[in-house]
Structure formats: C-alpha cells, structure tokens
Length: 224
Length: 301
Ligand SMILES: Nc1ncnc2c1ncn2[C@@H]1O[C@H](COP(=O)(O)OP(=O)(O)O)[C@@H](O)[C@H]1O
Ligand SMILES: [Mg+2]
Image (tube, rainbow over all chains, first blue to last red):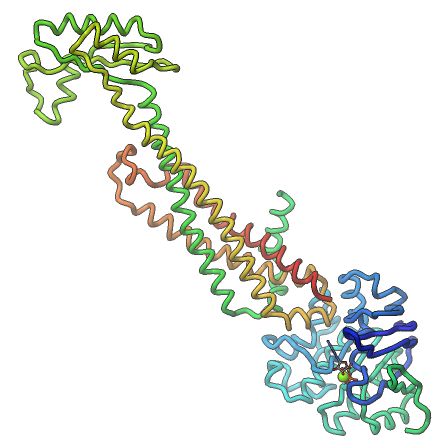
C-alpha cells in the first residue's frame, strides 16, 4: 500500500528523519510512537504525499509519490483516510457536511444516507450533526475527524494522535472502531504516545509498534 | 473562445454544491461586487461617449468635406459682374466639383432667424453667397484666395466649415479615448478581480488545505472559487450596467444629434453594446479567477 525506501526528510539544514524504510502492508496495523518532536507527524505527512522526501522513495499504491501530479496525489488521498493532528474543518459547514466532504469532493455519495447517521452515532456525534466545527470540544473534533477519515471506506487510515483530547472511555471506543476497520481489511497506522492505548490494542489485534528515535524507526520489542 | 464560453456556461449553470465549500461571505466578496458594478457603470459611459463622438465626427466630417462659401461684397450695380467673375474663377480651379450662387430665397432663409422672414434683400447691400463643393482632393484655399483677389476684389473665401476641422479631429480623438477607456476599464476589472480572488484564496488557505486533505483535485477547488467570482462579477455588472444605462436613458435630450452633450446616448441597435457588458465582465472574472486559482494551487501540495 504505502512504502518508504531509505527515506530522509529535513527542514533546511536539519535532518529530522534519516534513511527510513517502512512498509504498510495491506491489512497491517501499526503504531508509531516516539517523544514529541521526534517526527511522527512528519512521517505521516510523507505517507500521504503532503510532504516530499528529500531523499529516498515513497510509494503510494505502487507509484512514486515524487512523480505524481497534484491531481494524482488527490486521487490517492481518496484511498487514504487521514486524521490530522490539529483536525482541520471547513468552519462554515455543519459536522455532517464536513464528515461527508471526502465524498462531496470526489463526486460520490453514500449508497444509503443513513450510513452517515450510523457513522456519526459510532463516534458519538449524533446530536452534533448540524453543529459547526468551532462549537465542538477538542475531543468531539477528533471524533469528527476520524469519522471523516473513514467515510470513504479508504484502504489506509493514518491517524495522528487521534485520542489526544478524548477521555479514556472514548479513546477505547475510537480504538475499537479502528480495530474493527482493520478486521475488515483496512491498513491502519496510529501515531500516539499513549502506551496504555497501545497495550489495550495489542490485546485485540496483531499490531506492530514502531518507535522513532535517532531519526529512524525501530521496531519496539515486548518491553511495553 | 467557443470552448471557453461553454465552460463558462457550465460553471454558471451547474454544481452549486461546489462553491458551498468556500465560505460565503467576506470583505473581498462585497468588494468584488462593488468593483464590478462601478466598472460596468463607467463602461456604459465610456461606450456612450465613444458612440456619440463617433457619430459627431462622422456627421461633421461629412459637412466639412462638402462645402465652403465665397462671400461677395460689392455695390449693387457691380454685384452681378463680380458673381460672374467668381464663377469663372471657380470653373477653372482644380478641386472644385461644383459651385452655385445661393438664390435670394435661400439667403432669406439663412437670415430669417435674425431678421425675420420679410427682408427686402434686393434693396439691401447684403453680400451675395456662392456655395462651393469640393471634390475628393479639395482645392488650395490660398491659391483660390489669391486668384479671387485679382478677379473679384469684393469676394472673400470663407472656408467656413474648416473651423470645424479641429473639432472633428477632437471628436475623433475623443472616440479613440473612449475606446482606450473601455480597454482600461476592462483591464482594471481583470486586475481588481484578480486581486480580490487571490486575497480570497489566501484568506481561504485553510479551506484549500482541508479540501486537499480530503482528496479534492485542482479542478474542483478552482471551480468552487471561479463560480463564486464569476457570479459576483456578473451580478455586480448587471446592477452597474442597468444604473448606467438608466442614467443615459434619462439624459435630457434636445433631439438634435449635432449637439455633442445631448448626443450622448445609444440609438437603436447600439443598446446591444451595454447589454454585452455584464457578460463580458463575467468572462473577465472567469478568466482572471481561474488563472489566479491555478497559480495559487501550483504553489501548494
Ligand atoms: N515546517 C517546518 N519547518 C521547520 N521545522 C519543522 C516544520 N514542521 C515541523 N518542524 C519540526 O520538526 C520536528 C518534528 O515535528 P513533528 O513531525 O510534528 O513531530 P511529532 O509529531 O513527533 O511531535 C519538530 O521539532 C518541529 O518543530
Ligand atoms: Mg505530531
């Protein structure tokens, strides 16, 4: 699905990520951890073509991201659901409209409109469906962002700290949603520094944990 | 051009959903409508000015091309001889197509506005007038004057229409200036709308980022903005054009097209021109916004 081969990335003179090789195979479940500022968000952005590697090769669905036109990247993103760390919405549209935005921009619609209600209920936003994003709490925004990321039923879900602002109970619920999607065959990558979340996920699913340190990713052992 | 027009129509007609993703209100929005309205208003006047001066230049130019007058002042008993002498001179002057003394009736008609209709012309030492029609080349007025001075000392060449020559030139120039004004107004409309669109695009950076994140292609984003701005420009221009046309329509008219000020206006089919202004404004907005959006998107990923 998404593959990084000896990828490096830096801002100006500083190298943030160096010589990273990583493969998100279909149906795999990955966690990405590491201290704040390690480059988790940057790595995720490389994975959906928002950033271009300074060295190495990033493949999105077997195509070199660097060679892809903007429209090709846009098309690839319809197969990648992204939960951005600072969940961005269109503030003048309702929650329901924001959640279905990926469908809108690709000219599609849900086979059954009630699916949207189900999805909103899943993330606990049924009563907020007509609210505007600025009226939502931080946790509600993250849930809306997750709903938007999965509405297209994408092949890959990249979630950057999706449980950063939500209580433990909701964290588990969101995790269950992601695990459920993974069981349906979706590839999932979650960046988080919440070790408890990782532990409870490992009880449910075969997850690989990657840790960023020294500008590279290492597979974390059973020492969690 | 045809392809562009059909794309334009496509934008105007359909996909109201697309521009929902752009926040509806904003400073630049009102600015665009106002700018389009003002420039359409100005364009109506520039058009009216061009058309009016064009008509003026044409009609004065016609009159100018045609005639001069020779005025013969002589004692009554010498008058006929001098008229004859003048006619002889004119017959052998190159560039003169036709010459004819005005009849008493015609002279009376000329003087009637000042002295009333009952003027006893034959008893008054009124100068006799000879109308001279030039051919395409025209005659040399100085040469003719010199010959007249020799043959008929009482005759004075009054190339009376020639005083209009600078006016005709001015009118022609004014028409050109009117056309330049239209070109400038169009360019200005393009510039203002480009500025407004790029301001809107950078104000909506967040919108573009979100649309990109959820997989919107360039065309979709462009269309959202272009449709907004094209419709705004169209709406503004309709208002501006209507007000401008109304103002022209309500201009007091003396019904004399020779008078420059009262001649400003549109006649019959000329009303088609101002009607085209809103469409043209929409086209300019369409092209300007599309190019701006393309440029802005080019810089983003
Ligand atoms: N556009 C940028 N220019 C310069 N430095 C940046 C930029 N974006 C992020 N960084 C830096 O890169 C580092 C990694 O950021 P990030 O990937 O967000 O880390 P994480 O998500 O693991 O906290 C941080 O130190 C951040 O300050
Ligand atoms: Mg981060």
